Amino acid sequence: MLLDVLKDTLTDTLKLIPFLYITYLLMEWLEEKAQGKTVAMLRRARSLGPVAGAVTGIIPQCGFSAAAASMYSGGVITVGTLLAVFLSTSDEMLPIFISEQVSIVTIVSVVGTKILLGAVSGLIVDAFLRVYRKKHPRSDRHIHDLCEQDNCHCEEGNIFLSALRHTVEITIFILIITFLAGLAIEGIGEEKIGAFLSGQPLLGVALAGLIGLIPNCGASVTITELYLKGILSSGQMMTGLLIGAGVGLLILFRSDRRHMKDNVEITIALYLIGVFWGLVIDWIGIVF
Image (cartoon, rainbow, N blue to C red; front, side):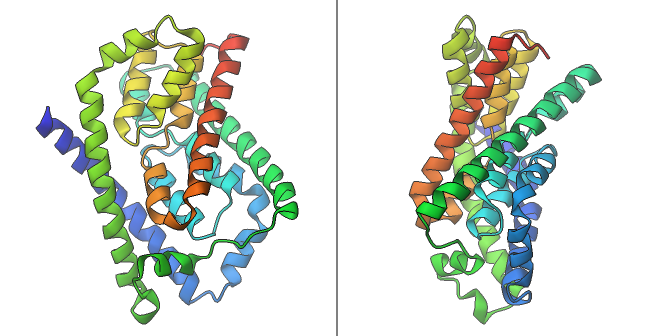
């Protein structure tokens, strides 16, 4: 079991490295070359950010959730856009659906629902925060804050080495946490998790959301497999997959250590939003 978890951890982490490096390289370039113009443009367009975030988040694997966490920490995207990406991220769901030959109608329905709920939730969060921050203004995040936080003196070197340094630090952190999370899932087992969730209509939705919070692809695998076996309801499945942001939350907490309170609030919001939509889906009686 130990070797299998280690192998999966290494494989999943290695897949993230290109996403992380390109993201940090882009952010370093924005800081050094764009002189604030590109960032200003992105911020002006942030009202539609959650829609774009929800669409890009559906790409399999959690690379885009990792990229979104870093971009949010650098002040490039809004909270609503970050949550939209997290909510729509499919991680291992789509590959499993395809390998299990799930009907195209079901796949489109599930993916489309994740996009819709991610975009709507993100737009609502951003609208609320715009009103709230008019009364409670505070300083915005800035790309340069990431360098100051890590004391890497990025401005003194070239952007390629600076991006590489950020990528290596985050990768090591992800590797350790993902390995520990994988051991926990393997130790408990899908059967025991499924048996505990089945027959618990309301509590099952909340518990499925907790599984989704596990920063490991094993969470989305477990949720998807249990749904395909008929153990989880549509609402329970959707809750777990909406909340399951892969390693996005890990990167958020690691790269934005100056704003831990905000990170906790984002995590709570992600969980509550996922549980809410899961309860609505089961209450309406939607079946994918």
